[in-house]
Amino acid sequence: MKVTSHVRRRSRGLMLLTATVAALGLLVSGAPAATAADSLAQQWVKDNPFGMFIHYGPGTYTGVQWSNPQTGTTDFNPTQTVNTDQWAATMKSAGMTFGVLTAKHHDGFALWPTAYSDYDIAASRYQNGNGDIVRDYTNSMRAAGLKVGIYFSIWDKHNGETTALVKNQLRELLQNYGTIDYLWFDAWGWHVPYSQINYDEVRSYIRSISPTTVVANNDHQQNTATTDVMVWEVPVEGFPPQDARVKDTSDTLDTNNTWFAAPETAAPKAAQTIVDAVTTVNARNSLYLLNVGPGKDGTISAPYASRLAEVGSLLPQKNLALGATATQTSTEFSGTASRANDGNTNGNFAANSVSHTGSGQYSWWDADLGAATRVSSVEVYNRDSYGDRLSDYWVMVSDRPFTAGLSPTAQAAQSWVWSSRQTTQAGTPTTIPIPGGKIGRYVRVQLAGTGYLSLAEVKALGTKNLLSGAVATQSSTEFAGAANRANDGNTNGNYSSSSVSHTGSAQYSWWDANLGAATKISSIEVYNRDSYGDRLADYWVMVSDRPFTAGLSPTAQAAQSWVWSSHQTTQAGSPTTIPIPGGKIGQYVRVQLAGTGYLSLAEVKALG
View 1 (tube, rainbow, N blue to C red):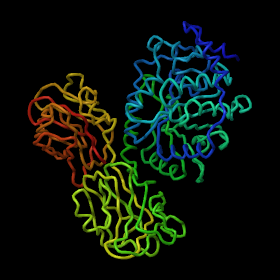
View 2: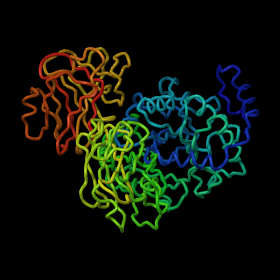
View 3: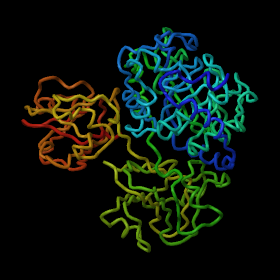
């Protein structure tokens, strides 16, 4: 089919001429070397271990998995404005870092106003033809600090498949919506032959207009020549094998393995099942892409959102030391420093994953995390033999580089250093918690005396903000200071930045957040605004495993046995950290004034 047959016949002026010239003139060769693409893909999988697949389109409204390509565009008719902010918030609550939206499925319907087909959102009744769900989705993702992925079906049962159509629509997606981090192709190789639409030509074209976009291709052949990241579709192929290839494991949250929300969609899988899957596939050099199909109202259903929040509460904390720049006093037996933060805890020296210094006084191993961040605990893993080479040692975290030549005792005495001396031989692992966490960039393991230092692995575990994307409410709202501004991930205290919450003035003004599932909270951080800081002064912070009781004063609320509380009598800082000794299992977090006034918050974090 010619390009001209795909052009929308509307008042778009020179669109056809421009598109045709672009289609003919932008056939670019000279793709980066395979090693560069491999490196980019490997880094993507490492940095983004868990994401959400979002299948949404005409099939959502016709109740089928593969929508009829002749379904009328008027059938796509959400019952309300599609809440892409809720999608992003749900991702964050699950501990995900990215999403992938079905911008165009096999039926050929485009969720953006494409110039190359009449079968798109502009021809639907949604927002009177002025909607653009791809635009809303990409905006919501970036506002939430999430990476953006797009699914694109090469197989187009409505328009037919041509190289020109594929490249023209990809150009719209890759150039009109900011950087697309991850592009997920479907039906190419297993339905549309590569001889029909040449992969190399299209892949080179993508690199020419969006060089950092990583491509995954569900060709069911696991062919390294036709993709950056290979796809395993779990309901069809199961989990991928353990090997060096970078992979995408795509699965469904639905126990019935549906992709689009449909009548047969069932209850979500158990949270622990999902956590186990994430752990398993990440260890096989694969990210885990978990599908959720929003319903006809354009939102992820409450049972699914709640289950995903539970998943987020169960996921292990991020290892901040993984792959960080590591150094040590000296190296012997080829035991380089990087072996101790390569992600491999194997303690057999022959496995080439154990570090080793020479024998010296106060032998040390350091890691530079690259940026200051909150470290909640450090785990050290001993080797299988010669375990006395990790015995009587110090663990330290600092926001400044460690001072050369100091003994560990002198190093630990500096006010900016958190330290813990471990006087016995380390286990596999020995976990050293840091109550309340320590903001630091540098991690050190150092012997208290003289000898070799040998490490199987060191992990610096970060804290998880459990409130990120949680449902927030407050006693009232004034000056457009909506409750969700206080847990949007943005600690900017300038009110004009539109990230500060604000209630009306009343007795015991409050702000609440529902985590979606009960989980252990180790501390609460509250961030005050830049001005009018007295609107967060003399306040209570509370955590409960039951909803807070309406109408109670904070004193009465705190008196209930299931509520943990702390009364802060001074003006909050940015942040003020309130530790919870031993942690508190809770689902609900509250900040409440002790008296009468406005309550205004730049941010609230509940750290796991």
